[in-house]
Each structure stands twice: as C-alpha cells, then as structure tokens.
Image 1 (tube, rainbow, N blue to C red):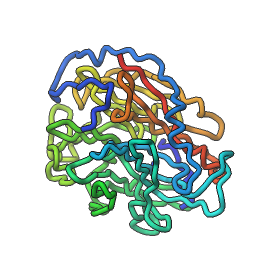
Image 2 (tube, rainbow, N blue to C red):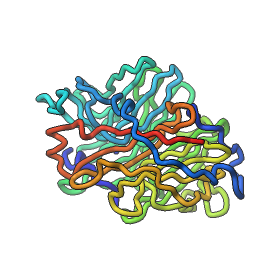
Image 3 (cartoon, rainbow, N blue to C red):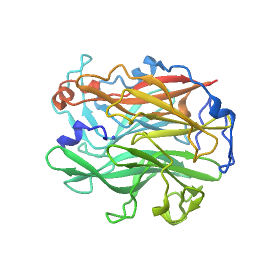
Length: 361
C-alpha cells in the first residue's frame, strides 16, 4: 500500500559529480559493467541532514525532497506536504504554524535556504479546489524554465486521499514564478503517475512513472525528445518490445518500487534507487542496475535499512540526488513520518528528510 501521509488527513541533464556517463544507446542489450556492481551498505550523512535543521520563519518540515540544479547554480528543493512557521531548537512549534500541500526551497551556492510558497502562506502550486491539491514529483530544467511534474490528489472522506491524474507546471527562471499549470483534468487514459523520476540526456528526457495498485507498484517509462516535455503528443511509451505513442501500451518494467524514485547514469549503464514496497512500510532502500534506461532492471540489492522505522514511525520515498553528489558517491534522501499526526504538530522536525551516501566504485 502507499505510505499514508497523515498531513493529507488535515487539509509527497544534470549528471551528478561522481556518476560516470551511462550508456548512450537506449537499445543496449546484454551485459554491461553496471549490472555487475555489488554495492556496500550506505552510510548516514548527518552533515546533509543539517541542511534542513531550520527554525524558520518558513519551511520547517515536509516530504518528497526532490532536487534540481538550476542554471544559476542554485539548488532547488521541491517538497510536497510542508509545515510553514517557526520552531524552537527542541522542536516545539510557535503559534501560527500551518501546512501547505507543496513548497519550494531555493538553496544558494553558500548554502542559504529561502522558502517559496504563495502568500498566506498557501501552496506554491495552488490547490485547484477545496477537495484537491497538487503533490510535487520530479522536475527538470528546459531552457529558461523549470518543468515540474504534479500529481493531482483528491481528498477521500475525512482522512483519506487518492491520486487522480497527472499535471505539469512551468516555472520561469531565475525568478521562480509559476507561469502555467497544464492540467488536462480527469478522464485521461493514464493509469500511471508520471514524474516519479526524471532523467535527461542530450537527446531525450526519460520520464519514469508508477502504476500504484496499492498492494503492488509497477515501474513504467516514457521518453520525449529534448525540449518537448510539456507536449504529450511527442511522448513515446516503453512497451514489452519497443516504443509506442499509445499510452495504453505502456509496459510494466519491474515491481516493488515506490511512488518516488531516481534513475541516474552509472558506469556504462544506469542505477535506480527506491524505497522497497514488496512489503508494507518496509525500512529497506533498494538499488537496481540496468544497461539501458528501460532495463531490464537486474535483481535489486538492499543498500540500507532506515533506523527510524518502527512503532508509530515509518520511512518512504527514497531517491538519489546526483546533481549535488560528491565524486564517487550518490547522495540519497528518504522521508520520515508518523501514524500519529498529533505527534507531528507537537514536533514538526520529525518530518524532515534524512540523507545517506552510497559509495560508487
């Protein structure tokens, strides 16, 4: 099942330093050096955890934790449900703390972080209605704009939520102003939430999506010629044996992935990072390797088990940040949450990303 976000009940080509350029032939078959990798256990990165050790005013907790390197060398962090306000060093929030469904954090080269929401504060990407909102997915720079994948999510009953359909936003650079939200509305033939991970090459943008059947989650893949991401008429979908312009022909490439993930060039192939969903609320973070963007993805390796998992707490939505990784490593984030929403309101610092580093030989 998809990890429940208690927050919903109240109102989830930058090739990084240290990653070798992957195989440029997306039709590559057979073996490659990437698929022979045997990864060591990842290590906690407390120095990266401290990046979000913030007291406000502004963002003080949230999930999703996508990142994009902007042309002016800032790093943009994209969060879904987020607490906005002030908090003491002990974690106690000041009066007036509120929650929005998405928020951005711009990080300067010096490491200074600034929160971006709509006035209010309200969600950076405005809620379309009283009973629906956008969660962010991955994003990519195209020319002088940022394209952000969005998941239109609807409230279900008092505490539930459900994915409804895909949308995309265009954000102008460098001022970070929303210029357009491309939302086709319900009724799309999509059964896949696109934008779980995005990987750019000089010729194509590869868009990974997840078909979420609650008990099982399947990986899908689309590609689009570089510079045409927001025009779905240019998209092709990976089938069992090729590519098709028909979205209904999109094939299941592997399973046990999470709703957020990453794919990065690695050696002469590719590396995928995702939280494990073969069991509900698993603490495992897994790595897969492949010789081409579509796979086949080799047997997954568990690279870490999150120590925060257990009791009321759970972790989810791990993915890599190649654009800000050190040479020879991949920086990976994951989210922490609790089944007790009152615990979050008492200490929103629980709801902050944790970071680990994976050594790449």
